[in-house]
Length: 173
Image 1 (cartoon, rainbow, N blue to C red):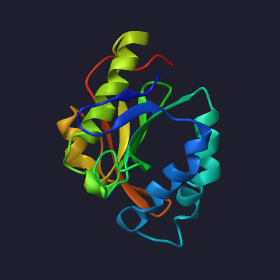
Image 2 (cartoon, rainbow, N blue to C red):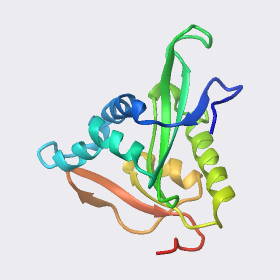
Image 3 (tube, one colour):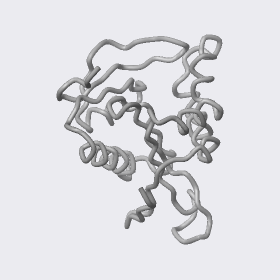
Image 4 (cartoon, rainbow, N blue to C red):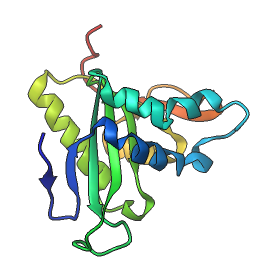
């Protein structure tokens, strides 16, 4: 996928291992919102480190789409580019990551990333059920995307999440 410039200020493109540092930094910016117990969170924090993200980005099992904008606090065309957000799918059925910089919340970027990935998946395969382990603060966003809770709040590795899924055929094993 080549970069696609959008009228709403961002450019979507495929993520590459070179994006690992920016992606890990964006995830880390949410640590205070996600981590309940730092002492137990070491496995989670390792799983979203720059090294781990570089591995996911290089793996054929993962598909990342990043959104870039002019400097986050600058008007479009100011000359600097930055990561506004990104989405990652594992095996086309599990929404692995979806993070958006706070200044870009409530501007349609998360929906644009999800819609973009859905279009890619639909073009490549029959419709499938999608799953996500949502952070507690993101549950309303995923509900708006058509996900529903499939179980109670879970706690593991110092974080809490809600398992959610879209309706549809389960993924092939």
